Length: 300
Image 1 (cartoon, rainbow, N blue to C red):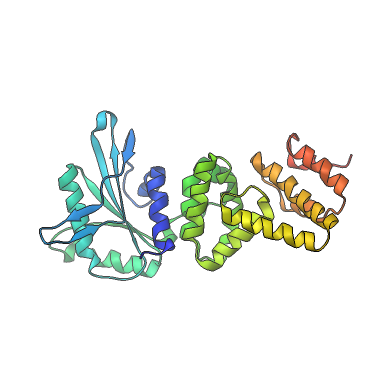
Image 2 (cartoon, rainbow, N blue to C red):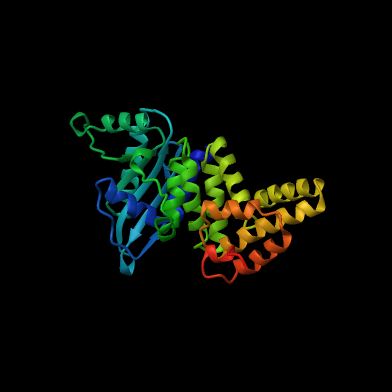
């Protein structure tokens, strides 16, 4: 069964076709002009009793439903020379069945594997030409700017998945949280699930810890709510008063996050260091009305 790291890139590519249209020009292929995108079947049945399945597929259509561009989506995590034949089948099948120009977009999580596939498809060495668009994390920008992330949340999700094995992937987390705050709750839940599935275990643990400590109660899944409940239970074990203080700290951060306001590190540290419940109550009220984050923690 494919792993979450295999499935997550396909999931976000099919959920957000704008990710594909943003990637194609970066990889040397023009983005299609389109009105909508549909997902054709990825199944290809042969005369022999066997069915092949591409990881994903998209059909970009112009007004009136006219097909403009077909895109076959594949994730390849390790070297397998036999893929050259199944990939050729996928492209040919979509081209013939839908009567549309089709490109193959292959994401290789390992840049070395991506380079081997690029060399494999050298047109001078092939009797049947196939020019897949092969890319790796090196070709995907790290979305660390909050405004960029908010402008294209799906691409922000794709970026963090692609860079999940970077030692400093945590630098992407603040922008990603800001991006999740710009979409509806259902989409945010889906995006967060994709992130958790697509990140390797260490990065996923750091993402979960970041969400719990930074965002507080604004969780997108039962898993986060369970983590929050555990933290609150630990707080009660240390004393009810301390537990109320900790809960109010998180509530202040939650109020700011709900409004899509990015909390500077200095302000976050000030909030988390505050031991005065009355002051925290004041900050909590301000969190939902103040014009700036700094105004929340201004002295009375």
